[in-house]
Length: 306
Figure 1 (cartoon, helix red, strand yellow):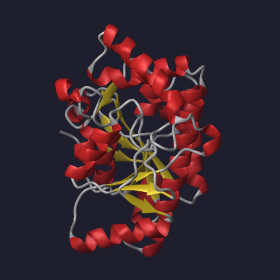
Figure 2 (spheres, one colour):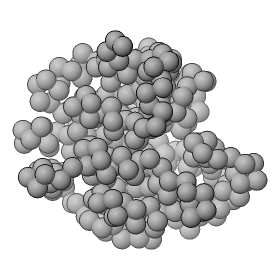
Figure 3 (spheres, one colour):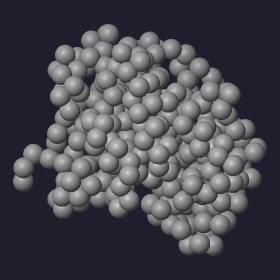
Figure 4 (cartoon, one colour):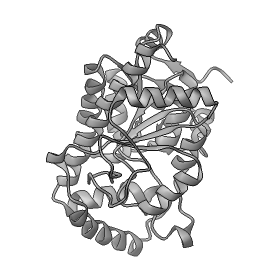
């Protein structure tokens, strides 16, 4: 089989020179937001990374080729696609073997980032333990990926539609460090406070980089989750969101939505229930995460620890 990895020349040059690069997922483009907000947000996220001095690398499988870094034309085409696969660890290879197009979830993006040599990745929120998982066993592959793949993931905490206490418990069991950025509370996507205290706190990118250096010294493998709260002016308080989430979950159950379809369906329904506020919050938090990820990548590159 031919080489299935194509790294954008700008990204490759930056990596070869030891410069800062930030991986970006593509599921938010294909399944997370409607057109044209998805393309506008993708461009804004890349711009946020560039503003820190880092190079963005949006990742997707295009016609069977794993692309690390997308040109403007390819990104726009992906944003308008309607039959794109949503790829995680279990089915990542199917898009390559069958020559089709797929967007990468958190887990798949981490795999691709490590393959390309990228250490920092920005996303919206991670997947985790779904509510009722004690019956459905619905647990995202993102958690296992964080335990095994050495990429620092900057997210606004677990998605608020999840069972966050159970998600945090599984992360602890798997040995995944979870650091809230500049606060003690673990954020929950649209809300700055999930009601839970984060296991760890970091107050600067230097603190995060030093932590990563210490883990390497100890030979500890796996990723780090940096939980970055959304800016307060865009936040939807937890109490308000819980009512909308409960309503959306009930509707999803009645509509028999399950598996990979649950999260995008719920996110779309919550946009409707919040009259668009959740979408604006989503845009803000992913841009904020991209900025912080860029700053972390610049800090790491400046220390020469790659």
